[in-house]
Structures are given as C-alpha cells and as structure tokens.
Length: 300
Length: 312
Image 1 (cartoon, one colour):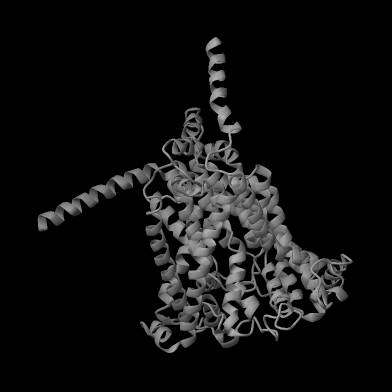
Image 2 (cartoon, one colour):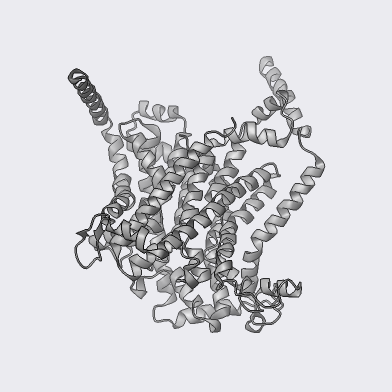
C-alpha cells in the first residue's frame, strides 16, 4: 500500500515541470508572430468559402451590384427556396435525385466498410504468403484512383453490363484502396494478445473479427465512412450513368448552376449545399479522423 | 553452372512448398481477404493492366481492338503537339503545386501542433475545408473575372497598377498561374490530416532528451527529432501529393474552360478525357493513361529516395 502511494508521488514530481515550465526554444514574441501569421493564412484560406456562403445569402440585385460587396447587406434565404422551386419543376423530382445519392452513398459505404475491414483485419493480424505483396500493390494503387483509370473502368463496367445502373458506382467504391489502407494501418495498432485471448476462449476467426476487432476500431470505421461518403456524395456519375432518373443530386445541382446568368443566385446556393455536407461531417468527426490518421504512415 | 541452376530450382521448389503449406493453413485469411481482393483486382489492378494492353491497339469500343504495336506512343510523341503541351502544363503544375502543397501541408501542421487543443481543431477545419468543399473553387472565376466586375481587376485598377481589365482566364499567360493558385488553396488534404495526427504522436520524451543533447532552436528540433519521427507520414503524404498534382483536371476545366484557349490549360487528364470520351479513341486514351501511370510511379520512387535522406 505504502509502496503504491510512493510511486504516485514520484510520478507527479516527474510530470510537473513538463506542464508548468515554458518549453525551451520558444519565445513569447515568436508565439505572437505565429498566431498573427496563422490568423492571416486562415483568413486567406477561408475567404473563398466565406464569400461563397455570403453570395448565396445575397438577394439577386446585390449579386449584380457594382462595385460588388463582399458581405450580404440584406441576407435572405431566397436563393435556397428558388433552388428548391427549380428542382421541383424538373421532370425528375428532387426526391428522386436525393434518393439516388443517398442510396449510392449508403450502400457503397456499408459494403466498403464490411469488405475492406475483413480484408484489412487478416492483413494486419495474420501472416500468410502474399500478404505483404498485396498490401504493396494497394499502396501503389492509392495513387491511381480516379481519373486515370476511368477509361478502362468504363470498358470493364460496359462488359459487365453495369453501365447506367447504380452498381457502376457502388461496386467499385467497395474496393477503394484509401479506406482499406487506413483500416489496415489502424488495426495493426490493436494488441495481438486481445485476439489470442479470444482464440483461447474458443472464438473462431469470424467471432474474433466481429466481436473483438470491429468494436475496438471505431475511430477507423468513422474515418472510412467519412472518406467514402465524401467520395460518393461528390460523385457526379455523369460518365457511368446517363439516365436522368438515376443521376445524383450533386450532378443535378451542378446542372442548375450551369444554367447561366439567370441562375446566378441559385448557383451560389448550390455551391453551399454541395460543400456543406462533407464539411459538416468532417467537423463532427474530426477527432476520430485524426486518431485514425495517426497510424496512416507508410513504412518502406 | 547446371549444378547451380538445379540448386536454385530446388530451393525455389522448397520455398514454394513451404509457402503452399502456410497458405493451406491460412485458408481462413484468404477467405476474409477474397471479397476485397477480387473487387480490388477488378477495378484497380485490372484497369491498369487493361490500359497497358489497349495502349498497343486501335480500339473504339464498337470494333474489337486491333493490335498496332507502338503506333499510339509514336503518334503521341511525334504527331500530337497538344499532348506535348498537356505534358508541359501538367509538369508545370505538378512541379510547382506538388512540392509547395506538400511543404505547406507539413508547415501548417507543424505550426498548429503546439496550439491549445480547441484552437488546433478549428485551424484544422479551416485549412482542410477547401479540399473537401466540392466545387467551391468555381468561386475563383468570380474573383478573376475578365471585366471590371472581377475583384482582382477592380483592386488592381484602383491601385493604378493596370489601366484596363485583364482577361485572367482567357489569356494563356495567366491561366496556369491562376490554376496553380487555386490548386494550392485546395492542397491541404488527406496528407495534411496525416501530418497533424502524426505530429501529435511524436514522443515528447525525445524532445526532452534533445534539449539535454544541446538542441538550440526549433529548426534543429524539426530536423533532428520531428522529421525523422514523421517519415512514414511523409511517405503517405507524398503519395497523396502525387495523386493530386498529376491528376489535375477539375480545376482547369472549371476555370479555363474545356477546351481552353490555345490549350494553355490542358493537362494530361483532360487530354485523356478528350480522346476517351469525346473521340472514343480508347486505345490512344489508354496510351495517355499508361504514360501517366509511369510518371506517377517514377515520381513516387524519386520522392521515396529523397525522403530516406531526411534527418541525416
């Protein structure tokens, strides 16, 4: 008992100087300069976004005012309501576009989460021939995602007969290397003893995976979900899907935006609607994403 | 010689046998990996292989591919001036925005690292937001409007630096710099998050030890302690930067038009789109994609070699 108490006292003594003392190599002047610099940069970074939001709140006459104002003088939500009216008038209804996006995003993300975590689990926690090689290929493939593979992908999807169906977007999203990579790196941080203990208790691989590993990697889940939702939400799907009734919300919104000068106000509203979803998701899950990103490093 | 060869074969066979035995025991692992591996192979490996294959053929989707050897590559280099322009533009963008964006990501992650927790969270949101803000970058076409309504023109005219508005997004001289500016604005992406998280994970005790060993200023701290600890994240960030720097197309298409004046803002990817989706010359488009893959891989190798020397 007394030994334990003594140990605690010692630990406190060790930690105290770390918190109380000012760190060496840091000056107050330097800190102030740093804050000023960061504030300036933050303003520059945020300005286009602030401007986009404030334009969306401007009534039409203010949008065309000369000289232009940066902030809305009489903020209104007219642009947003106009946007919904326009959406309501298109022959494919707003709810249909929304359904398309939600369906693609939900199914794509759920499938990606399950399939990628299963693969990541064995790659992180077991050794078997081919594991290392496979992971190397995944890291290289992270570079190739997106536009460069769009054309051969089109040919493949065409052969499979998936062009102009939701699957053209959903199934490739299952295999996105980014989420797989982050999941694997995060799972590597799990103590192996946890898995071994469960195995001794007679759990099979599936039980270990669903009962032990998955509940312990929730931050990585969130990160994977968020990256996947961001990618699928912004997916315009215009190359793989050409039927208007299967197109996504973002595509429809950007069509309105392309409607020229008469739709300037609505266009500004579209910008805000499109960007608000990923940013909002990020704000709510920032700490979990950062926790996952801590294990994102690539060793060579 | 023959003896040596036999020995080699024997060793190989032996290794394969052991691997096979291990693989048999790890059946469960393959079963777990299979769904992902199959889809990944289908949509991420096979496309690369397919595009290498199609790059040696004439293929327009309607007819079956016809083998034409290196003809696509020869036309790319010798006959296609626009491709050379696109290569030049892509390299210009990549060489400037790639390293700069990468350094900015690290610099800002490093600068906000020691701020109080809540300030740091806000800073991360502000810096990261542009890269996920959908197509918010089109707002720059308002700033750089060609008439006197554009903010940049208006400011420059008020200050008396120019006397007539500049057609920022139509004049080839200004197109690329403006695109680069916008790309830099969006460059604090996934790599930045990785840096922020990585810096938080650097062991504080190492700094204490560093002070004892006579580290005098923040730069020495950065070079001798922080950077070596961050190597894995730096590698990851490099991969992200390369993808971003060579994959540029959205921004140039949205700001400068597609096609842009004199192809001054054409990149490899827009060139690929042109041949793939507008002219349906898939073989030719695949040759362009193959060139892009090669550039990316070589670039990644070069950066890895460079990063190995950090902190030495």
